[in-house]
Length: 280
Image (cartoon, rainbow, N blue to C red; front, side, top):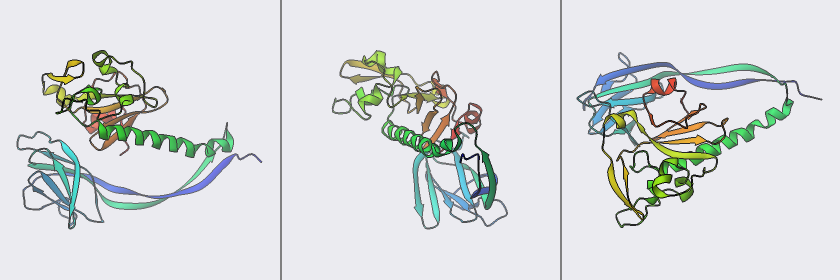
């Protein structure tokens, strides 16, 4: 018999009581949530320590210096006793924390009516999920290797010389050749890597810093690049596939055309407005 519908119940949990709290901090602990005994925060040098507690979960954390400028968050975290430490580039004077104060358990009944494709459409879902996870893992792998500073020139992380005047080869050659920005400089034919073009783009904060290009060496002579870190952008050949953006340890996806992007604002509101959804 042909399957016409699937019914069931989804059970899961979600964080609720979402709120934010900002405080000027020092080595003395400050209550994370005013008037409650939930986690406290304190600063030690460039590390913000947040007390762990089962009742609450930190969703995001930002730090600012004495001038009010937001500090860049390092990808590292650390643990000691009942605290988790978040590293920043600079000495935090004010900390802003987004948190969930409680956890809710839910049960949601569902009924899915099957039209064209019937049960075959359902059986194909695990394969689609596995394919997405494979692409995500692939992009993250490139992101970890593409961490050096050549602004919006990803291919330089393969061709640029290291201190021994040899090619860095920090990323695979195939990834370097998927970067359209470097083809004219390094003389290769642009080819996608596993269905994606990989390149670096600069953040608006880096662009506004107005850093001048510097001269770097490679086997063919010299090339210019801005000494910014940039963020990794992967755009698909298939218009139905998502674009990926990696900034430090954060991963975002976007189903709109991002192939012409040259810079980006990393503010949460700007990312959401541009269609970026954080997945990790």
